[in-house]
Length: 228
Image (cartoon, rainbow, N blue to C red; front, side, top):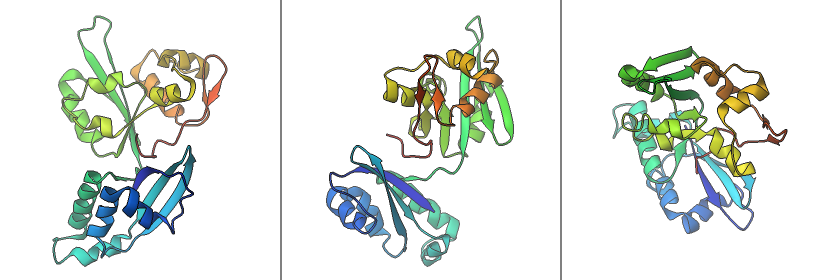
């Protein structure tokens, strides 16, 4: 299992120093490591610029066998550890994602939503959103272009904002504002008149650099980095 967190340090941070650094500057995140000290893992530290560092803590699955006196299975122990990690400011390193988009019909009377996974594209009307949720929750990261579409499902998926990588937000961080998805469709030569087209375009935008209508290009941080 791999969990990660984002930290800030004015001094250079290395994997040799990170344990003591967390203990001093991020005690809540260190408390997770302390409370599960019988699990032996390894740290990785990656500088991201602007005094920010990505900290990844990797624990071999075999280590969780030490918890079988308390939990009935390794899977149950890993689940308990991950739940505690989330409470202490860590998250599981996402190894997969689901792409999501939604839009109203022209008369604004009906919401149509769609997701794209390794199985392909699936679309749902507003009466079948719960069916879509059952698929979405399997993935640790939800990729959306705009934060607006997240509001359509927040009642069914309350923690969607903790899992969503919003591309327009990332573009805006880099250049101040983000174009409409349809504008990017023209740049990429993708037909965005259908929901499937929009989902395909969103997936293309994960490949750096993102080409903007004004000719600029933007390199976005990877979707699996911790969400800020």
